[in-house]
Length: 346
Image 1: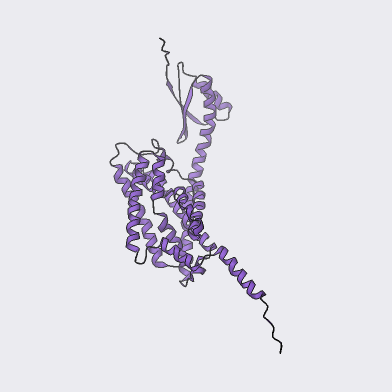
Image 2: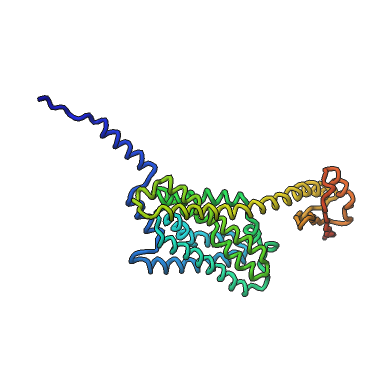
């Protein structure tokens, strides 16, 4: 009888396949680490909940104060402190793992947390003696007119956050993700503008928040599917829950894309004439020794503000220049501020 050793090729192939999966997927230990980071469960639940609410309240106060003071640095500080990203990614992980209990818990934390931040800003707005609105505050102005490009940026940022969560070797990017994704500041703007009597601006800031949440959910589900989180965790829950949750996230994303698209078209329609009028007005004012201090859209009209010494430049010349550039159909209104300069000699 002749004994022959079994060929090792089959064993090698299986090992290579397992290594290839580990390059894309995650291990069971990785899934447990993600659960510990995102889910409010187990013996540490009270401590983690108290930490979440403490940081959320503080970030809401910091963001509201930063918006009122028109301070970018303060608002960025609020973004870093804000813990809202945790339950949003918790929704994603719960959907992938088909964990109904943690799914409901994470949704509740996001909804209640958003309400708390809006309420904090609304209350703090009563202590501000002037309205906090877009026309006088750059922090408000940058968050009340979201566009499609904001959604694209949020999709990419949400993907980075999900990758950093799945791969511990890139988790040091999370502070950058917290800064890039805008969650608490738009909610603060909602509360402040509501208190200031500007519901349309509040709606715009709310749309920015919702679009960012939708982007995180959509990109997060895709990333976790690519990392094969469900298979690594050995998920045995109902596939119907996962499919229905993914469908709802898709509907949510489409629901925010529609108004974002409309807002983008409206902004672009107004922005192009403003840019063109700005170029013509700058030449006109410069020829007269004046300076254009601002060009803005106000409904269907374009407002041009200019200042300089006497005598005032002829508005008819500006009108002629606009017609020559094919802009004669625009409703352009000019505001001139005369400033006489007197030389002081000794």
